[in-house]
Length: 293
Length: 334
Image (cartoon, rainbow over all chains, first blue to last red; front, side, top):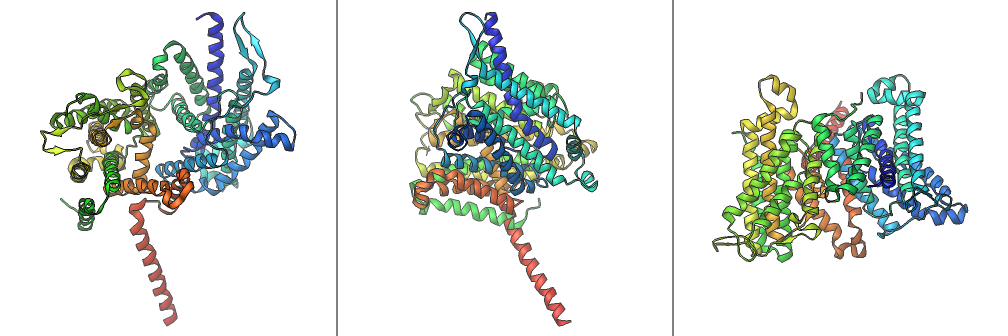
């Protein structure tokens, strides 16, 4: 492997890891703060990717915008969608056992997948890279790196930074953290905790949808994409330590690198590597790398 | 031993109905119920862990799949293998893998345990899926079904049906006795409060490991039957969808009761067949996931204890109504 290839693989690993982090952060937030195991989280990613495909012509004919207008419309829709979803379904799950949550969110996966099949169909689609970002940077005489992948990494980094600031530096972040520690206490201090939860859930959904939308030009849009990303995101959440955003970031990057380099160096064992990594880490640290608390 | 009479009656009634079923059923029905009974054995094995010990295993399909794959791999190309060694070999292989996985993953707890068992199942999945050992995505065919020196012909659907039913009854009875034995009580203690069990002098780890291994062995038995029934194995038997489906079955049926696993396996598979049937839904049967998903959501909302809790729920409704009426009557009289 020469230096340019190595560099490209590093960038790919970084981009994949950061994208995983986006989806996994919502999962770990919802689990850490509300205590809900949300199997349907991968479906939000899938919905995002399909929105990027299906909304583009509609947005183009009404507003005349391109990829970024679609992104904005999709994001707005997903916030509303997440808010309603929490209100109608998830708010009933807080007091239930974890296994009941698993059952209900599994039902939601089936419903989302079929609604997708009814509305958009079961075909595999591609989404065009926006012309503004369709260039490539030459790294050597023959190798080049697409700008769009850098854009994905940049967006993910910005969001990660934003999340960090909201959580540690704002009053909203403080109440959310307090609410995850002791729900009743926060409520008795006069804070509307169910509204707070609804906002956190909507944010988690919006982030997963955004991840799906910006990933769609790179990975094609296909029916099973939500479920494959769900399992790998659970791996991220568990390696990082449930509820820990910092842990999720580290674990996502770790998995990004192991997976990307595994595919290059050990193609026969590429599928297993991630799970071997998870098993080893959990045998070494049974509560994940960073235990939230 | 203390056995509730009504529960015993329920089990006896169910199994007698199943034994009489081939008299009235057609070919499709027998095939379907055989499949459901195999899944019920699989679900029972998981119920020992989830309901009996409080360990949620999300990689149970690995043991199922290993049982199935060993059955096919060890069968000779063109000859019938003897059931006498093929069956123990499949079950033993699944049990050994369960012992290894359990020994490592029981170090973790809760959601971490769920994920580690998933990780080990995924490893088994990729070994079968990506190496020449497992024949890749296409799977392998079982050319000749195993037999007992020409006495039992598992090629005959009714023989296979009755054999599966016999295994189901045996597994059900075995788990029923096991959970009521001292060992089962210790498992229940671990489920409720592991710390306290340790304080009372139980070394909990060997108990959990034994439960995990037994559970894996029974799952392997179910896998063996599945391979014999279909005459075909593919990696999907080990996929996490399969682990998820069996977990959904026992949750739907109701955790903490052996009959919950039975009811869940029947309810889940029959619902699936119902929503898939073109006779009822026409072209919409293509979208059977929608109906199944909505039914699951509704059942979570209305049945927090699963289908097993249904009679109790009705009874409490009924009692609530009559007592309210009685109160109303008393007020009027006053």
